[in-house]
Length: 89
Image (cartoon, rainbow, N blue to C red; front, side):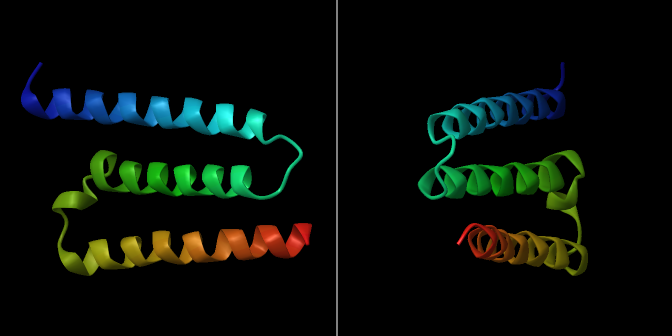
């Protein structure tokens, strides 16, 4: 296993851990809109960024490609809580 494969394996393990964390926090805060929902959204955004940067190799891409993807994650991070809390409230 070379260094690149080892890094991907580590990032995969991080994604699995984040998935389990979001599942557990979702169960813990089940039925309550608030901190649990916000935590699950933040974890999802971290996972999205991790997949885009490390598994789609955008980390090595020119800034002209990476910038729109980073902006998309930030915009999604701003839109999701707004949409969620607008729907719940």
